[in-house]
Image (cartoon, rainbow, N blue to C red):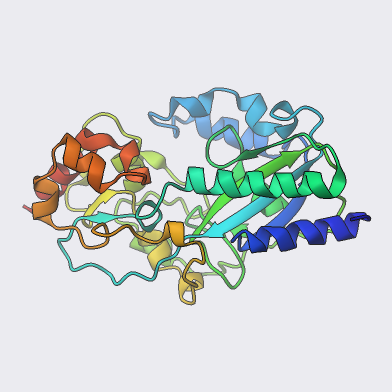
Length: 312
């Protein structure tokens, strides 16, 4: 395949064949404008217990430090929406993204297939696939690649498709010139996500205070959940979807074509009895292969016990 336009179009077509819903390109460069914003965010203690965000800041800002000679960041979005009915109030809830197979494994496998296809078409190419597994500003690169904008809920929103997407980045040393226009924010005057967030974690400008976010508190927080959040929990024991559930851009979300992201049997209709009956072994069996394993048995039990306080 010859010609930069053809290779860009070819990569997009192959990405779609692999199940991705969007594919964009951006020159690999230092994110100079983002640096003062990120450092200010860190200085305010917003990282909470996510100490890893304070490390490798220079690498996080420059993808060329991750892949020698990097010239292009290929941004890929894969949908995970599964159109589940909303559970009855009081039912222990898990964020949609964690009900299926761990996205790290799925997207890395698909990303490697795309990289191999590029190599077959163009010759030797040095590159690496990343998905929430290295110091990469995923949403910022998605904006740079023109596939969406960062909404007031902090999620990347794809025009006409919504925000139920995982992101992955293929950073390569092949230059792929292409005309990319950033998508301007289209949230307008809508504040539904801000008003719906029970813990007031959304700042209104696309940034989040993780220390108030239910997703952070149920996954990243290692200590006990502060009791100040009692009365605001809304049944979550792993992650939270509230700000996405209320987003108008998600009204016409399409069910994912990637079957590995569809809910595992038994996870979309959990009950108090199921969670109360979990021991380490049954937990490992029930959530085998899903992102929920990240919280561990003790984390899920802690979250459920906090939910019990919230109900009382």
